Length: 241
Image (tube, rainbow, N blue to C red):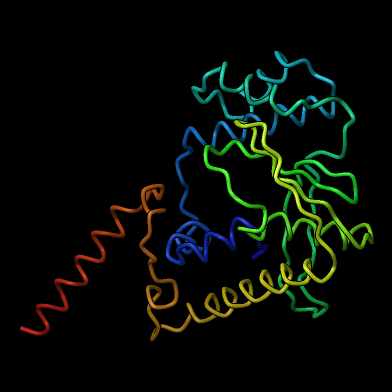
């Protein structure tokens, strides 16, 4: 399995949801926030790469969501807030890197919204803002730029489009190493559990247990998880009776 920041984060948020999505390969229905983020990111890519107008970019972004019913005004507003222009940097650049020097190392991949070797920017369509060091995403992407281009410092920025709010920090090699170790340790833990799945004596729920939290309201399988937990509780009560 090739890992990404979102995969590693989902595993830490709820191992069972990670298992259902990435190991069982269940498909998740697209939601309006996800569709909006996808559309806006693609629109900005088209402006920066190809010099499209706002109107053209909105349409291209909408096409990229398979015409999900989004409000044009919302898309246009967020795109304008980015103040994107053609050639302002390298946009939606893909990376895939090993997380250690071992030939058996897990790999991590990702797309960097916008960068120019020594700086990177990640656009957010979220309603909720947060600190740049509250997650490992920007720091992990900074590590990737250091690996690819040999720079020793990277300025990372989260840009919350709804509020025209940039949140920035400068990261060095030492800080980037923290992100690499986080990703490596998490990926290795998952790999070990994936290997143990083949052991019929170990139940999947023990390897990838549910982790109830406020994030459950965004999970498409929350009801199934709740019902499963209730069934297990009932079986335990019958065994005690």
